[in-house]
Length: 526
Image 1: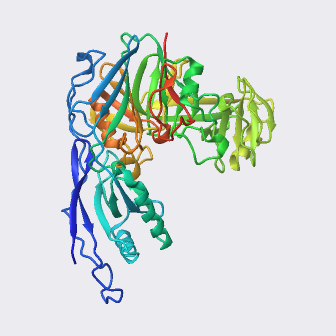
Image 2: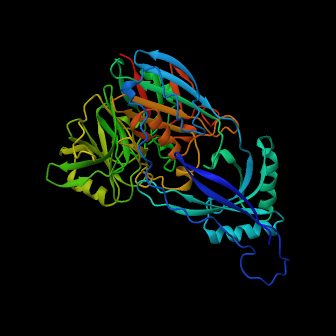
């Protein structure tokens, strides 16, 4: 058998992991008696998961002028300093546009099995044979998804067909169609997206806020309601914000009318409106102070008769046998269907019982129970009784309770990237431990806090072949460290990544237009 061998690299922060691509040739006839795979797969020695990268210390933010960024060591592509355009937006707020790199990638075709292109060795071998029998010469690429802080490394294999330059995407698409006719699912795959070595290019927008000279506040916003989605520019305009970016992930897998529900904690003006996923990283804002930490929350309903029940969720669709609470910030009627609801006034007095599917009136809250939780409401929340609902948010780094004051905002649903100046990607705890999120490049919205308490926000545009390729989690972490972040989080990305400055969307959302999102981080002037 003839083998064609080429090497690429998977980018992991400032380190690289070598890859080997094996090109198959049709060496056996259709009547070949040889069982199993018709090739010998010879790969580089296994590379273990990489440890956390050393803390590479850019100059302390306090030692740099507010209007400057580091001049060397840019972590995306070569270390050459990017082209930077700087604008002073308001006292203490600077806006930067960074561009670097040149297009070096084209297109290939990747085989997909059950929605994934990162396969087991056995599956990749079988798919490669199927592709070969379809008349194409496949390549098998082995790579290691590196270890992150809370998830071990693992090996994967990809099956690819062909290589076309940037302007020939249509040629790759024709191969996808031909494979489909033979029952093989595949996709056109742009090389800049896969997380391997690339020349870019990149376009990054950065906002830095110096709390020593900025006189405004940071806030979160859920727009017109928790359940609905709204654009960042609309939320910024409504609040009169100087600048804004999208917030955390939201639940696209729930009922359509509730798809704006954050998939983690949300606090707006001191009100807990969405519960925490225990241990998930969040951004805590209070006035013009910001910090990144891990949180948990608890909400408990205590009846006047002494009966107690945990409130499992806030402003979302209830699960079987679960008690949830809806607040007036829900912005729509509660979900219709099975269950029992009681309406509480501001003091916790039960005003009435009702069936599901009605609005939450101003000044009231609604407890909604399904199954055994509905039975609990019937037994312990009759009209005229009092049910005291208490909420608590705990900082898991310190063990302290987070004060829920009117100036407190919390944005959750993100992924931890940097902790105490070191790369620390908490993909498993944050529900994102997969090749697509860890390795592949996407548009990213990033937020971090410097050692001096400054806020740093970056939006990396992506999914624009030849223009900007986005970033992996490792590249995102390195970028935030380069920008001086001591702690950093990745908020929602992809088509949600949006930055608004002075009322205008300044980046290029990858959907082609601004997407409605669950929540937003607002920078509001005095």
